Length: 58
Image (tube, rainbow, N blue to C red; front, top):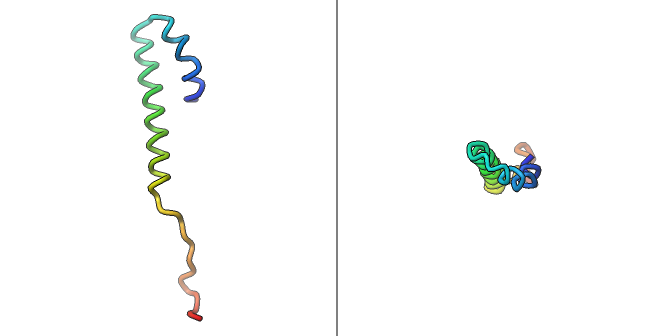
């Protein structure tokens, strides 16, 4: 969705409908911000290590 919005942004800007362009830009920037936050959370989340708790000591 974000990629489609990036491709269509020049067309939207050429329409010169200011409220519509501002709304479009706000949605685009918000989408990019959410994607960046998701990447950051994924990066900061520790890897799920599955260690057996009931394994006997050898």
